[in-house]
Image 1 (tube, rainbow, N blue to C red):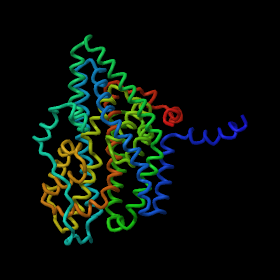
Image 2: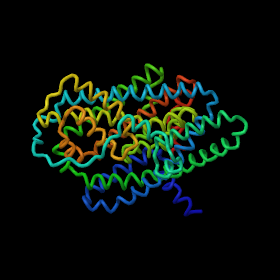
Image 3: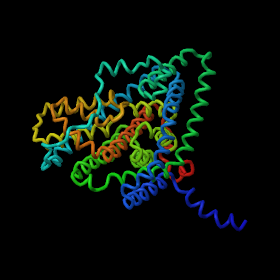
Image 4: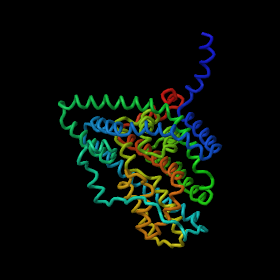
Length: 426
């Protein structure tokens, strides 16, 4: 009894901390250790890799089951169409605003002035961005099992939506199948909760590796680009997103920002919108009061097509490359960059290295030197942290607005204080 009495306070301190506090502690310790170890911090990367693998394990079954249950929970197909249209309009609209902010920031701060990139090395191969026709054709899986096995999220979403609608149309005969998917979804939510308990340790390993590998040597020549991208991301979330929540949703934007803490921390360290889905779905329901029907549909869709942070990054980097190579852009070029980035966000979201692929597409469209990709690729990981965080914040913002417009938002949960939710997050 004496030993239990002595040990309980120590165990209780860590267990009582909210998840976001644990993650911040993991980040801080990881950066400190990585800075001290330098390249040797590579040894700690497997800790983060294990966490990422656990997250990746959840993605396909979680997206598939949550989408099917999300669709089947909406018996009204017209309601499903409304939610889909609202989500698509918001996602594409906010992406267009994000690229505009990026262009404005790049113009204001002139990030590329004084940078001599005339002798830049050849650009890394970023892959080819699919055309609009290819994107539309590739949305329909010829083999759903293969789509599930390879993790083709866009095809999985289309198949899950189709299956959910078909189950709704089958009526009573489909109830056993619907119950199976509901049970699987609940199981995935519980598994997600267990995996998220590993987040602080995984974040520690990832941040130690990043700090040890990407030191100040690589940041100094491009510190202005990094600073401008991060500043633009902060403005997009703190001003634009909160403004939409306040004006369109007539909700307290501070509550929205508080609810972002856990998923934003996970997004910042994992740099994966899809990988952050478990934390996003959890936060949407427990912190913001969005119904499972809406969050299970809107969030996976956003993880696939919403790339606000990436679009903002396109604007800053495109202008950086133009200024570095002494290329003057016309007003029509700015419009072309906005249109290209907005439309490309759908086609390239599920492609590995989507940020560089979108940037290569933008550079090609406006005739900028592709060699500019070489130097941007060096800091891509640092920029990816910020842009992924914005993507996830945008997903949650849209889920809140859509939930409010459909009367699928529990404002008693949205407006309550954070301490009430800490036990479930710990």
